[in-house]
Each structure stands twice: as structure tokens, then as C-alpha cells.
Image 1 (spheres, rainbow, N blue to C red):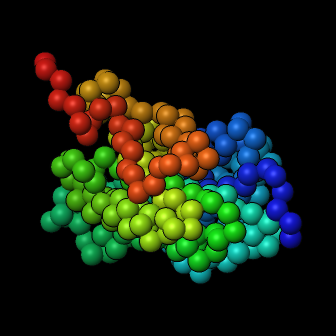
Image 2 (tube, rainbow, N blue to C red):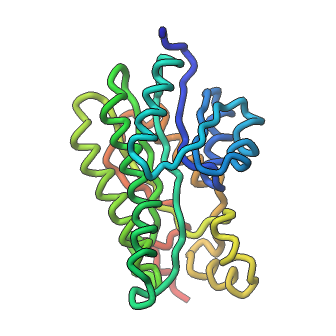
Image 3 (cartoon, rainbow, N blue to C red):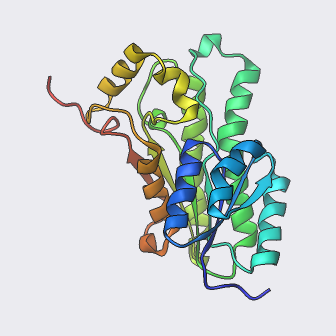
Length: 247
């Protein structure tokens, strides 16, 4: 099929950040496919934008590969893939079971790897981009974050290595590392006013992030505006990873 002129992006994950990214890309004039396990959530996020919807488990390599191949067959182009699939398991290592760690790795790292793997195999006809979502916990020692820190550190290493592998053919790979963001996933942490106040105080800018703030950076990484950026982890974390203001 001949590709259209309208850029086309695949977003894996229809949660708070994935939904915000869909709105941002739609506002920039892009066409979209929104994919994930929860059809009602996908419909809520994607249907008002005219997005294609695909129900799949992003942890499974073949499902993501087949989706990307099908999109290329139907649309003629996929300009980028964003993996916004994630979880926030918060337990110390001694209280984390093997199954809980495996789940954290599969949800956060396997899904990112599936996106990179599909892009590496299939996105060959034009310059393209993969944008992954890490976490400030991958670079800052936060108590009770062992499982998610391990998984997201893998995401960051994946981004750098894949960027080196595919740089010669114009496939860029980057990641965004947020602090705590006001998403449905974080709701259990932010529902308690005392916990929200404590979480906001951890960030030098004095508040938790909003999904749109992460989405704008992801959209930039997917776009040609960032055409000279690859192998980077961009922290969008209210200063948590780098600043230690005086009291």
C-alpha cells in the first residue's frame, strides 16, 4: 500500500500517559493506533480521536510484531512507536515474591523490548522513532522501589543499546524518565492527602507531574523535531533526579 502523507504512530498502553500522548499527537495532526489489554479504556481514550484500536498484550513479542506488520500493510507507514505500558509495584526486596518481580519485569521491560524488537524488524522504509517510558527510580535510590527500579533500569539500557544498533538506518530510540505523575496508576498513592503532600515535597518543583507534561516530551521524541536525538534518557521529574535545594 502507498503510504499517506499524514504521520502515523502506534501507542502501546492506554493509561494516563498513553492517553495524554494520544491527545497530543492527535492535536499535532497525526493518525494513531492505540493498543493495550483493556478495550473499554482504549475506546475511552482513542475513539474520540478517531484512533485505530487493537487489543493485545504488549508483553508478548509476536502480538506486537504482528500488529506493526498489519499496520504497515494497511497504512503503508508507521512513523514511530511509543511504549507507555507500566506498573508501580512498591515493596522492599525481601517482601517481593519471585512472581511479583517477574510481573514487574514483564509489564515494564518486556513490553518495551517488544516495541523495540518490532521496530527493529519492520520499520525500515523511512526514518522512525521509538519512545519508551522509564522512571526516576532507575537512577535515584528510592526506598521500596527495587522491582520497578530494576525493570526501568533495563528500559534505559535497552534504549541506549538499541539506539546504537539501529542508528545507521535512521531508527532512533529514546526514553523519558518521569517522577511521580498524576495518573490512574498512581491514584492509590495520591488519594491520601498526606501521601500526596509528601510525594510533592520530594520533587524540588514542589508538586507531582501531570500526564500532559510527559506526553509533550514523548511526542517531541517521536517527531522529526528531535531528528538529531537518539540514545537519550530525558528526565521529566520536577528536578528530583538532579536537584537538592537548600531548605
